[in-house]
Length: 214
Image (cartoon, rainbow, N blue to C red; front, side):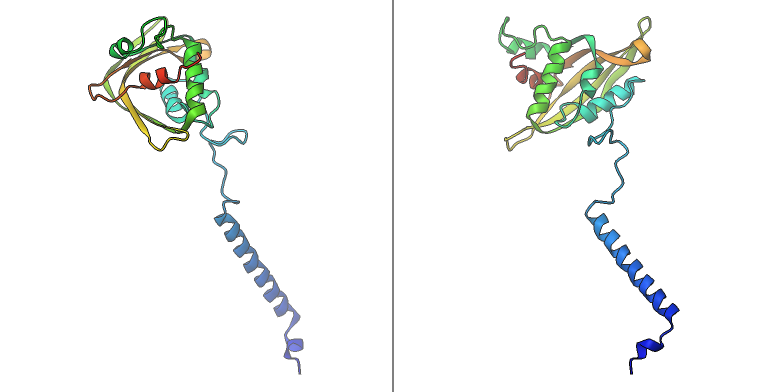
């Protein structure tokens, strides 16, 4: 005799529902392990992976954007958008003197277009890059009319070029001047690079190496 025919129908229904629920829970857990149900990174925008570009409402936002976006292969125009039309980059004096003489010195005429172009070149060749502003070496200075702020940082940059096995460290001092302009948005107007006495190449050296063709 088949005993299943004497099992109440309600009990069978509960058993079926329970088994289905268990199977679904297992499937969800399995897919979650594959990353299919992971919550979308709130920093992602328009399906583009990576941190959002912060609104340039204060000087801190500029430094956050530099750390997150400078030279990153997958980054958009966040860094370029922060560079003021009147931007000037000034290298360390010794870096300038050790570079080829004018008119072939790579630091000559370094303006907005050169800065944006060099950053694009770095992005196109970087397998890995990480930027860190480690500490300040003196208090920031400000002006009014126009409103500017200059910060004085120890920095280091780790950079590995595509196809190369080693990561190179660049470090030094950066004096970065920011301007509050139209719409109260801030831009970077001047960047002065300096050696820090460590003997390690500066960020300016990385920039100069990537100026080719500009």
